[in-house]
Image 1: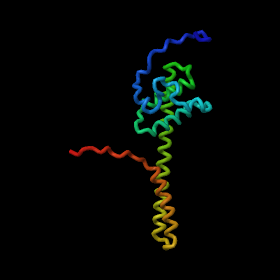
Image 2 (image 1 turned 90 degrees about the horizontal axis):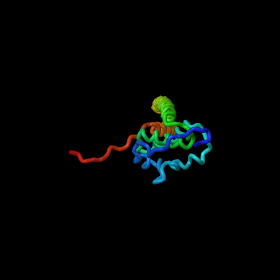
Image 3 (image 1 turned 45 degrees about the vertical axis):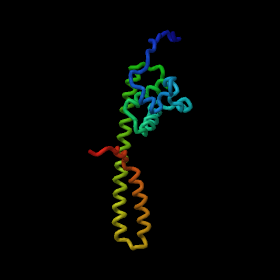
Length: 169
């Protein structure tokens, strides 16, 4: 029994969620379970739980096999390291709050990105118009500026994975 006189219920088995995706994405470190699945957590100074989870969520979303359940698994792993005192219900509530926070953050990023794309397109159109009437010696400088804008636009545009090649019937 813990020192505060509260006895915790015995732990039962593992999560009801399939562990295949978590193992594939590196959340589970082999047969030992999830205790050391994020080795960088212990080495980092403690920061806000949401900030740390935001970084982890950004990282795991780079994997093309990411699914939504991965967020909950990663959040539970982080919560067990940073706040092992939370009950399952408290974890669920905290996860729901974090998910809303993260979705709002992603929406804000998308809005900023779209505004930047509009701004760059306007600059590009102005440069094209300026280059059309500029004397030939100025074309190289204007073309260089257009190139820089084009590169930034290309980086901001979403990339889609190539369609799988299959048999055409």
